[in-house]
Length: 103
Image: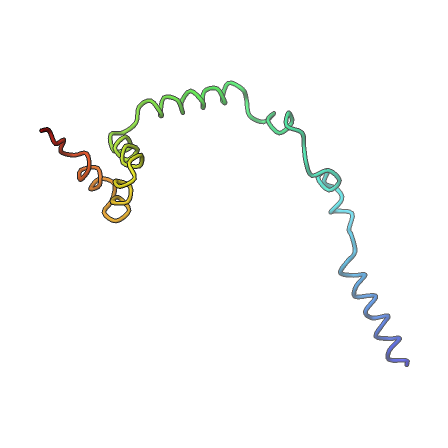
């Protein structure tokens, strides 16, 4: 009986030592409210940088490499896309669109 009481007290002490909530973990404001509103979330990005990034993306979309255009054409045509999975997009584009057959 005496050993049972000692083991119980020891278990309580170990649990108290490992499960103790220290003050350091509560110093962060994120402990109570981990989410911030949208306005505060976007404060660190300047608006002009966002607009510049959007403009750069639009320029990149307009000026695509020929390989990218060929790949998109091939992706739109299902047999070409299947051929591309096995042989690559360059070979698939040449196979289906490389030589235009005229009658």
